[in-house]
Amino acid sequence: MLSVMGLPFAMATQHPDSVSRGFTAQDEVNEAIEDLLPLSEGGHGCDEKMVDYEGKLTPYHQMKWIVHEALQVGLEPSKDFLLTPRVPNDRLEGIERQLLVLLGAMSANKLSIASAGEQAIRYIIHPMSETPYELLVLQRRIVRVQRLAEEELGLSGTRPLMIIPLIEDVVKHFHADKLLEGFHATVHREYGILYDHYRVLLGKSDAALNYGHLASSISIIVALSKLYRWGSREGVRVYPILGVGKPPFRGHLAPESVDVFVNQYSGYYTVTIQSALRYDTPRQGYTRVLNVLRDNVGHRPWDLSTDEEYILMEAARLATRAYLDLLLRMAEHILVVSRYIPGRRDRVSTEQYGRNIIAPLAFSSYTGIVPQQLVLPRAIKFTASLYTMGMPPALIGLGRGLRMVEKELGDHALELIIKTLPMLRADAEFELRFFYPTIARSYIGEKALKLLLSDVEEVQELLSVSAEPIEEYEKLLIDTRKYVVAGDAERAVKLIEKAASIRGALG
Image (cartoon, rainbow, N blue to C red; front, side, top):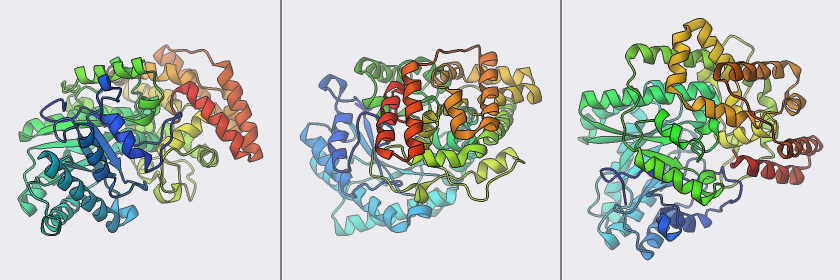
């Protein structure tokens, strides 16, 4: 059953972050039914399924196929579940792909309405949302494609699909309220569409990849605060969605951390339940995660003053600088290792959908040496690569960033971070178990390693954490290094998968 005001709380996704299972596009229909079936029936207990087209080779009819199979097992659209496609970004994949996804959504809704009287698809996720204009363009396309579907497919009885902006950049997080404010005004003026509520997806992974773990954690807290204030002022309900994964760098939604997670990110209404959480987590732990998330939906976010928000934004700027100082020294090594990370879904190449770091360089006023060309792998392969190199990604820049905050903004700024980010200790404790400096040195050299060692020392002192290394895991990384040097992809991949099994996620 949909949880709050007809809204789902658990959005199963098609992220390629699981170790134990991989999927073809054909497998994903049955996977969706498993995800949407209740826990009591052996399913994953989610009430929303993201059908992903961003950088992913998903059939346009997959949404319709899922609706058909869901009806066969007695799941009712809009009552038991929603399907929510993520369209491709037209800047990277072209307008045609976006239009075809919209037409596929209309086709799925036609079947849903004809069979159950309700539309299965009510929302469309727009990735990499940056401006109100691009949201307005997508809304225009939705209106036009819906009109076409009414005329040519016989679609009827549907409400206009609503856009969920996916904001996955630290600076954009800080201005999430402005994005909604601009879209709210223009969509009403241009099309007479008045949103009575908004769902906004705040992505952790890409923000972390570009700005680091500390800055991306801060920016989500600030975004939740600002969105709540804007909605209260405008009289519009805002229902945030947290786009998070299982490793700390990507959000740390896991059984051992979920109690602190719901406190740190208070204010959410929906959380993404990604593949590693569903397939690489013992059933009892997985069930507990879902129950804790459900019990804490819709609480008020951190009640931050504008002064506190400003302090946190300045802290994020310093943290980003510390992160980039190490990242830029080892980016080429990460890209090499990423080629050995196994795929789990049918996705496009890194070259088409890789991430660059122009925005974080400007945000942090970084003055160091920057490579002329720099393309990073996507977030899951990036995360997996760093673990493979003995360098847990959440540690990069974390200790030095916290120390810079203390020195430049004062003790009160550091205390504010530790208060509003209670997960930092759990994040650090997890990451320290997978830190192996000798292996890291073999990839990145002595100078870069000194910065990472400084991060670790500062983290241990400022957060009072420590952890014991895992001997079996270390041996796997040593052997993996040998095969990477030798270019033996088959053997390297097998060891990378074994190491990831110990962590409980690929990346």
